[in-house]
Image (cartoon, rainbow, N blue to C red; front, side, top):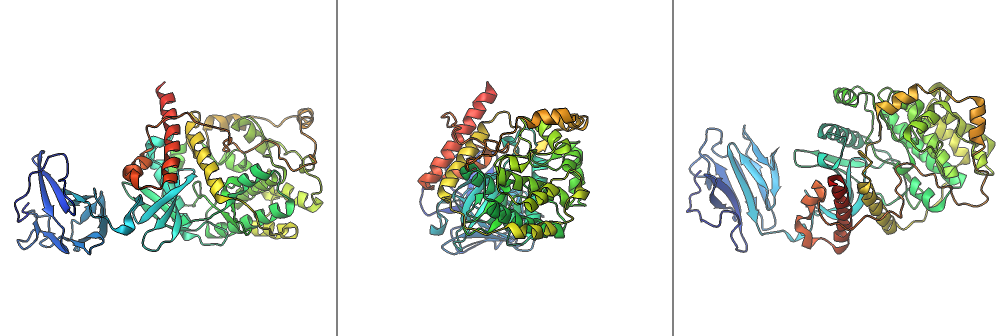
Length: 530
């Protein structure tokens, strides 16, 4: 390597203490640090003698790459070479450079070091997105509120949790499911779906950019207010049905319809979210996942259809219809259809039992509406509505669109508290909804209860309530708001460890939220060590 200048010899383990610098660092012989100053408008890199940074190798083109600087940002450009330019392990045509980035050209590896930061890039960043705060945790990762530093637009950024943060899942399965979620989400555009704007999959990070929806989930609404009046509940479910009908027209099956995935904006607009368990159809990657699952059934036990619990890889739109019917049942009476203590008993309920009649909890529901709900929750798919559009049309006569009041800032605080409690739950193997084969097989061998057993069970069902407080039967993935983790401050998850490198530049409220999550993670770590 020829830098055309005498390299300085600073301390081998620290950058030089000077202001206004930008240079490439290369280690030679293991302990000799060589720097190349790139604080100029252009720095040409290649094997030709005229290059500012000459790399002598048959794999390096005469003019291989150029680093540019416009008083705001540094960029590196690949000059259409065969061997390419890698930034942080990913081949790029061009890329913005930030302090600490790794650059590979053929067999040469450099670290880009600079103290020059564009005023627009102060703060904590994921690529071009400035992190404004935490929105919570999803099925496979952390959800951040971010702002594009160029346009000022705000989005939700879902970042894949790395393998070390999930027990019972390997990195390949997480990446495949995340790939499906990003790919399917980007292809679907509907007013009742959370829109995915794009996704990034590479060796160092995986994330999905989505529209930012300030909304309350149907589950949160029920937990806050109790039973939802049937005109509003029917309208919410009707809009969700339209979203599902659109999804099914494109091919995929959602497979995880539940109150937590139904978002309601203040003006009453409903958006369905989360494609973490989506079934995309005839895809080779799905065959790989099917082999890895070896009989596990995917879905949320509180809302899963009978056929999906038998075989999650061969279901159609009617499985989503059943789950949507269970979701409506929950909204109307404030309890799940089969409030058993474990997943096995819940699956038995979905496969062999009839849910307690809604009239035992709610007065004044139209008979026609009760018949519609009963039809959506039939055990046999053939007895349900033929399509979600048919179901949505049936719901229209009972639906009234209404505004919904909520404090979004307060909701974020509750969600972060729930995220901390989920980290603290040492019994939860992972966040993906999966029912292991042993439980599924036990349920397969279970026979339906006798009429006398069903009668005895019905005697324990509470009578109708005269007020709006809901019974305390929430879905399994609900974390009590009273959960408070111990005060530990170590062992952040990998993606958060990377994000807090610029801790002092973070807003105070973001620091506070990350600190609380760290406390919970450390409690979990301490329990595991014990």
